[in-house]
Length: 143
Image 1: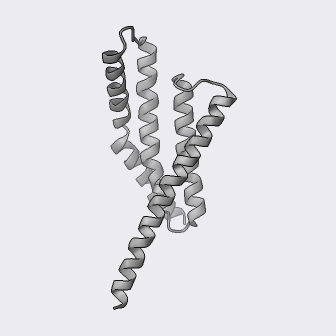
Image 2: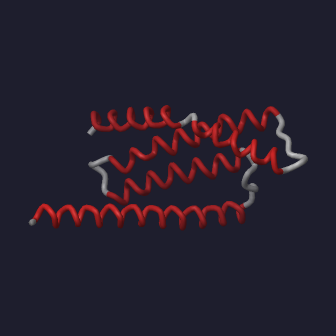
Image 3: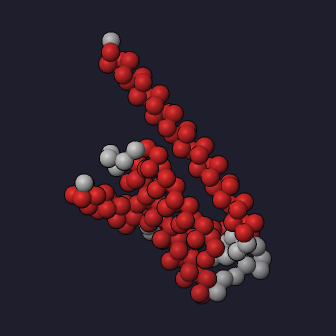
């Protein structure tokens, strides 16, 4: 088990490093769009720096968290729980740190409910699609 977990930890880090850089790129595109569309838009240096660091961390952790769904020794609910928790904490933390989400229980509660609903819809869509493909392949093999 320990050796397998080292393999998954390495995959987590490799995926994070491979895709972490996309976070600041997306933040830059958003800031560029806001600058082009809002006449009085400006950011302080600390805001830009914080956005770069936090969006890198967000992309790193989101990419790395995909490894949870591939840990063969874990049951599906455990994989989904750790994936959801990692993604949720990363997003809500990034949004709160950058003040993109107001720091109030109501705002965090609404964000949490919407995040959970969207996550569940996406997860069920992927799960049901993969299950249908697997069933189709099994029927072809049985012939």
